[in-house]
Structures are given as structure tokens and as C-alpha cells.
Amino acid sequence: MATVDLSSYKKLYLQTAKQHSDVLSESYIKISRNSLDKDALKNMYISAHSLKSQSQAMGYVKIGALSGIIEKIIKNILADNTQVPNDLMAAIKDAIENVKLSLRNIQRENKEKDTDTITKKLEARYVSS
Image (cartoon, rainbow, N blue to C red; front, side):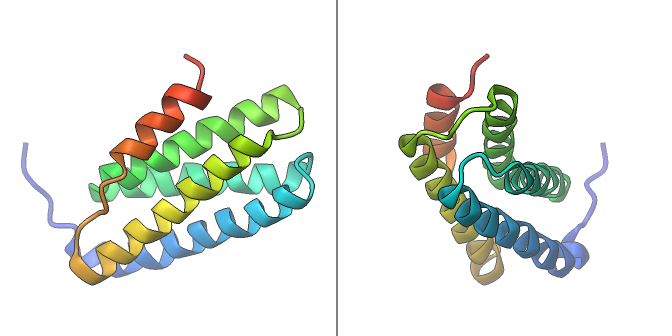
């Protein structure tokens, strides 16, 4: 299989990824005030899904995996229709911060931050099989 050079899309990726990470942060703030805010939860879900897909397409597998975990967690919250526990809110906040750090790392050093530890921790604790 041929390797495709996606470097010309990096700037566009970073712009849209920043928009999605900003929506994740804004939605988090709304959810922290009211964990039953369905609109904020849905916006977070959509942004996490979009960020996951775009990151995977660009070859940023660590951001893709962490965004995918955020997506699954929010999907479960929406399905359960219950308030979000404080420990889960803290974990979501940590995940969003790691996504943002990784995006900055790509912009500055052209490589992702290693987020495997937090991704595995969140998956093991908050994502049911």
C-alpha cells in the first residue's frame, strides 16, 4: 500500500481539531454546571467523534484513540440518562486537557503527546465492553 503525504493538510487539521477541542472544553464547562445538559453532552459527543475520525485519517492515532474513548464515555452517559459522577467529570477534564496538549505538541514539534496511559485508564474504568 502506498504512503500518502498528508502534511499539506496539517494546518487545516490543526484548525478544525482546535475547534473540536474548544467545543469539548465549552461543553465540559456546561456539563460541570448541569450534568443533565443534553445539548452539551451531544455537542461533546459530536466533537469527540469528529476529532477521532479526523485524527485517525491524518495518522494521529493517539489523539484518535483518546477522542474515541471520550466519545464512548459520552455515548454511555447519554444512554444512561443519569447525572455524571464527579470522578468521571475529573477524568473527562483530564482527557480533554491531554487532547489539547497533544494538539499543541503536533503544532510545535510535529508529533503527538503520548496519551496511551490515560487512554487505557479511561477505557478500563469507564468504558464497558
